[in-house]
Amino acid sequence: HGFTDTRRACLTVKCAQPKQFLFLDERHPTTRGHQVLAELIMNASYLTPANGKSAVKVFQQSSTKDRPIAVEAEHYQGRISAGQHSWAQKRDAQAAGSKSMRTTPDAGVLIPPAQKARAPRLDYRIRLLRTGTYYVWVRGKGATKRDDSLHVDIDGSLPSTADSLSGFGRAWTWSRDTQGGPVARIPVSKTGVHTLNLWMREDGLSVDRLLLTTSSKYRPSGIGPAESDRE
Image (cartoon, rainbow, N blue to C red):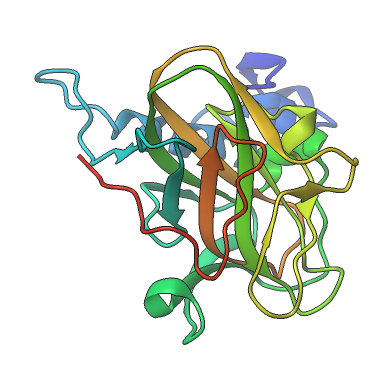
């Protein structure tokens, strides 16, 4: 989790980098410590102690040709705030289901991939039926070019080909473009249940829907396909 000291208290040694310490004093975690503990508790809530199976319904991948898995942004199973920023649900008549998720407040903040640990996050539990490359589509919008990007990954790992996903307009737009050039895609080496993560890059972005597909030629239109079943 990036800590260099998990035993001593930051204030005791007069540390210059509190985020590298788990404890602020003898009793209290640092801000980063609180964030990590919250993430661990949230992730633990996905499992039931009795049988080890998922305690929440998991989005199921389609077995059709393009094998899409489509998710409404507001149907997250985990939400982590960071500092003053968080993902907030907003009503929008043009969004699928009339709801979307927006990074707030819109203060002109940009978080690069290397610093994603300090970004707010949304988690979605998904079941993937095959390994290989998955292409990432997001239906989003931003009021300006300073509000139109985010990071996407699976299981907390951020491949360079899925960060800085952008290309959204002021109206709802499907995009898989990244600022680095290639289309957003994520390699998957194991089938089964995974966690799809959305991280804030620029505050002020609104997200309506997410979609993964194994087809490089698939292009969603309108609001996209029906949301995937949850079991």
